[in-house]
Image 1 (cartoon, rainbow, N blue to C red):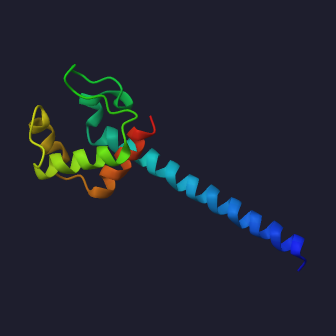
Image 2 (spheres, helix red, strand yellow; image 1 turned 30 degrees about the horizontal axis):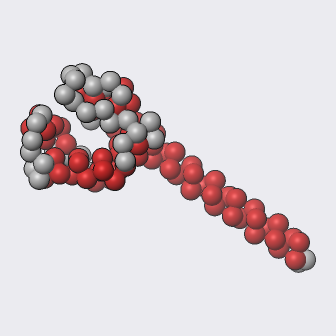
Image 3 (cartoon, one colour; image 1 turned 180 degrees about the horizontal axis):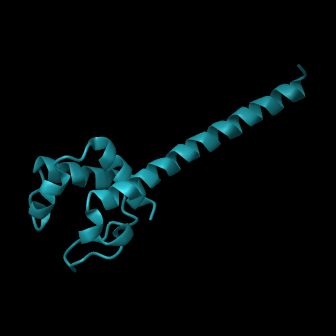
Length: 110
């Protein structure tokens, strides 16, 4: 195999790897969108986290992904127990860490 052919193959492998990783990230965001609706987040925080039902509810779109995950975990564990989070605690009780991550990825991408 010539050097040129090897470099072409290596370039193709790198391109396919990045395409696959990007596809995985998009799948996570799509799953997050479905979970956001299925878990009822949409009812208080609005479509894509942009239009909360009440002025005191936070807008979630475009927030930092790690921040969102930590807030959801803190609400679930009751480490955060202020404001309206008492209403949210039952909603997040059966949400897994993986689901938190998918929802956060979706919201951060908005």
